[in-house]
Length: 116
Length: 115
Image (cartoon, rainbow over all chains, first blue to last red):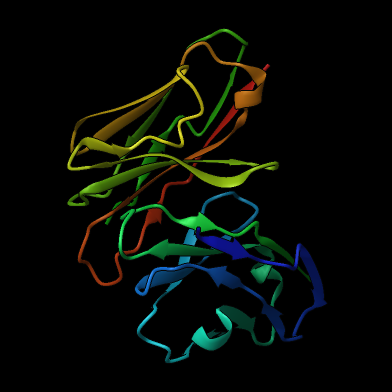
């Protein structure tokens, strides 16, 4: 079975602090894809990043960075120097590569509040 | 490029009424998905289509729910009759297999309230 766990339900930080959102996944597929989506207060789901299981290279995009570690089945997301606009619910998601072309399994989400 | 377009954005209806949600996927995308988001169950896949054909509808909660995709640019999710427990945000999403990332892109959601 596939599963995504985001153990942190809510995180509150003060602006300019760094924050890491944890994501742990379970899958038996040898090929799979991991995603992070952002859901701001307006409600839409915004794609942030995709990572293939065969590419463990970490990635940085501006203030965002992602740490993918297959050994611990984790795909953590770090926001550096957080801003109020980062306040949102963040979802980690998993999609298997061997079947179920589209079945994204989502974690329960982490609500991030960045206070000024 | 236009993203996934959903309508209506918000709908309030009375229990027992028929509800139809609409979706226009991104042009050229050959997969379309319907997801539902609730506080209790989070984000769950209801059904998805490939080239307009339903592939997996195992997430459709019951016979009151039905989805169609008559052509590559349009899909509907219908609830008949609606019940208060159907209140949720319904997302439509699409992807094109083989693109840079096989990434699923979501619409802005249809916020349904059944009273």
